[in-house]
Length: 305
Image 1 (cartoon, one colour):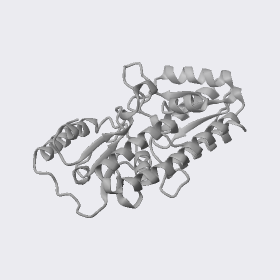
Image 2 (image 1 turned 180 degrees about the horizontal axis):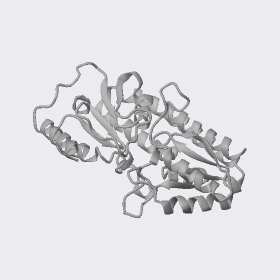
Image 3 (image 1 turned 120 degrees about the horizontal axis):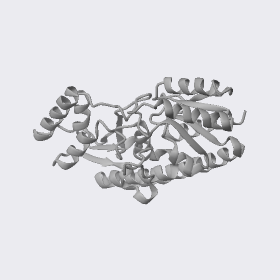
Image 4 (image 1 turned 120 degrees about the vertical axis):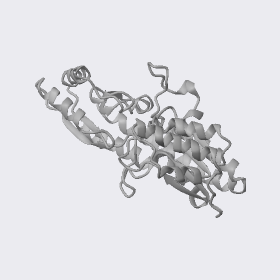
């Protein structure tokens, strides 16, 4: 806790002092918190932007803590795009302080630009932050990025618009592909069991029931009661597979699998899904649309055996 306060103090001092000198080449220098956001920017900005993702493969954004080395990246960027809706829980205060100060770096919470009526409201009054799990919603985040890039760099606005329109078509094609693939799962098996509650937008968009061991944030561990209730559900419905996630420890899924086994039913562990982070750069899940296709194919293969 003391370390967090120390880092926050350093950020405040940076904000209060003379800004770090910006880059002088023609490209916009952009910092994205997650790979999902970074990939949108790369597809829209292409060779007119230089993008750095703060969180790489396997990094849990719910738990990510700012490091002192992150400060230079933040304050040398022309624009910081982040998800918002409390996804980057440990960074939220820093990013909001930057947006309130008269600093040259622009900060944009892409998910918070989406109409709240389209978002899933949680019991605590906040909104589910995993909006990229519905491509039609994430397209709205991409449109926000397109608008900000065009405003910051009007000379290249037509270029960004052309790239954006092409990418939006690819997004729609992938959205339609997922719908079709999920329908191929028998209705009685169309249930996705995951490590944490990141797939509810996916559920609503593509027509698959979703249950999870943990809540929307990985900050709190699942209780014995949560595991017991979910094990009862799996055994009763004879769900063939449950899924691990790249950013969530295996222990909760292993505990769930053992609990199901004790009820006389053997549930397999499906291949790893990607929820809060992309896969390695050269893997099938190394970009946003690739991740969405990979997750879908993995789910379909496991539930149609």
